Length: 348
Image 1 (cartoon, one colour):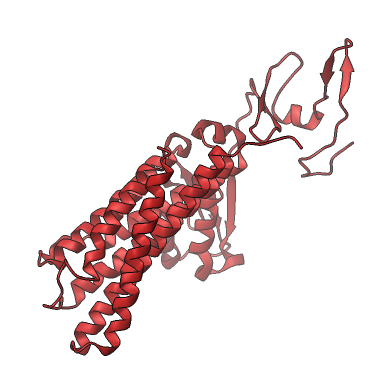
Image 2: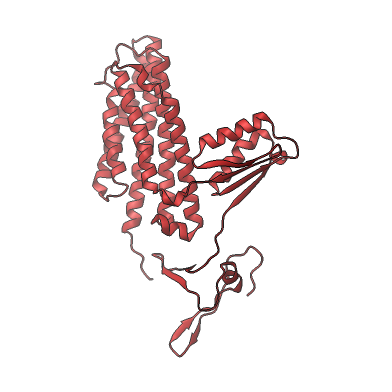
């Protein structure tokens, strides 16, 4: 069978040779694309699903992904979106071109893109072309380490919020913009890494994580980004508004912060250690805290506090409730991962 151009699937017949050895011939196109010859070695891996994965063991061919963006085709208003798309697709080279001179405003967008990502630098720049390359080898950065970094950022921001709500100096939250940008950059980096794992068997091997679990970890990445968004909202609320004198750390909504801190710490620890009971206990504690916030927000309608204080409490409670809800989603993702790890494939 001759595959059509771009088709990466073929059906081959199993043959027997020497009376006891089963063989399958390799597609010529695959062999030549990987620079292989007779007597070269290939690696065959037996996957947990029962399928076999074939990879070129001795290939000298190295491939890089390039993304070409024509500014005249997409327009300046969508330039940032296309640059992010090129980054997420795993492009090692991004080439932006225009028939007209690239404007200063477009170059500002390019600089904003470089600041919003990790490891991208300009390699060539003219009036009509800007070429960028990825200097960071994402396969050398463990997914769990980057997720842990996201956790440390949001947990430290909530810790500072808690201190400010207790009467601490508001300057503790002065770098909330930088923390928000770092969370966003890490999210983009992790989504780029997950995309590469899903597409490349060799990168999957280098990360030491299977594709199913990588896709679940991408859900955790988005969860941390959303938690980071609400950490940023709460930080700005504390910076821009007067904190009500009647607010106390011992009462809702501020009293749920220690519950969240304890639960998220347990969940992040269980990214690696497999203690399902700890995940379940954290989920129960989070659910209780969410219910207490729901009841608190209902009570604001009949509260005798001033409208300004009620509005502050409502915004604080809503963001904390959303942070807890996203953390609840994380607990469910970890249960999914653990269930998948413990599942057994059977013949039927």
